[in-house]
Length: 491
Image (tube, rainbow, N blue to C red; front, side):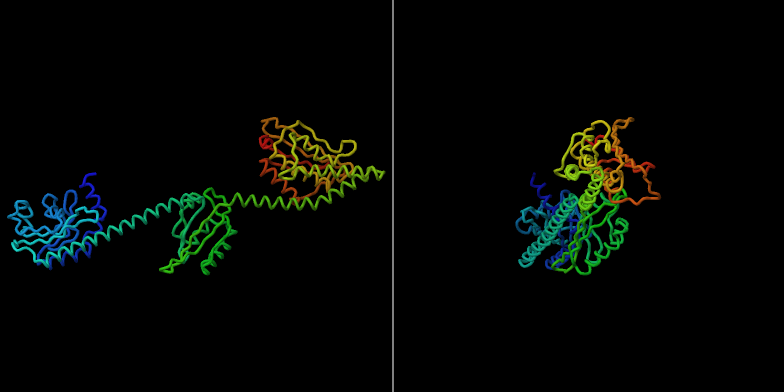
């Protein structure tokens, strides 16, 4: 980089546009004129093609071409440059500023030099009459002091600009950082007005950020709005941390559960309280928690019902045995088989089977009679994966439990047939039909209320297997049809 290019870069760092007609520099120029008893005083900075007068008195022009500049010579000096009579100085005698307006005769310029040593221009005074005697010692020293004051003002402006630039850079970096976080980040005033959101808000909602709590309402689930407002207004009033879970409307119109935290921060000097908060998507975790709660409830339900199932099995077996010893052996075997079947609904370390048909036969073995005709499982040996085994076991365990309490297994003549088949149209779907035959069955009338068991079956089929089921009461009993994608069974 050449010296001139480097000099111009330093000059540009002062922000000359912001310094144009600066009040402090104007006062320095006026005082310099009075001190030196001159009609004209200028703070002149030499740019690439001109010299710019950022402060002046006694001259209308705010710039002149650089080739005619006296200050372009003065700025390279280490002390003020003095020209007693420009007409007699070979450097300036034919200068347009001498031969024409403003008819410079006497000139003194105190150099303005940056802390890097770059010459910038000069603080100069101009008279239209020659001064062979020049400035007095006091005037010369005063002009140098004023030149240093000019540089102090220029340096202050430069430092302010550098500080603002650094702040702007930090704010930009902070904005990039906030935009990179996975959740929504925001800030608000003490009064509750929201003044900053990161990019995640618009990505999530597809809308412009809200400015007030009222603007939030269209994005909040109607059931959550009043509770959110009450908690937020309480936190604002007390200056306490805010924390809540609610549903936020997304750009596709769906609601997702989010976790929101906000913390008040008091700035030391102004005692002005501000709030900084986040909104994190927890929908997947929230729904998983609901599923775990449902499973825990089901496990409790199963533990309670197991006694009813065993009681029903004992009663059923007792009717077909006259000998107590045979009955005891039979019921013990039934209970052991029931324990084996129950292993399939254990979600982690339960049993598994490579064949759906064999798994169902083993699960339903506790309900089989001596003739082996009470329970039948028909169909091909379709393979199942470890992920599908648990929901399938849960589904058929529920069906068998209900049958033992209310359906075919609760009747001596009752029978259950499970049919397995691939869909003939596409071969990509497996249909499982649970058919209960109950002589003397009286189908329920009206809309039967969906019980816990039915909801559990629906959750397992729809959510875990991506399938569907249909429950139909027939004159001779009950039929449940379950359809599941083949890919879900092998997962």
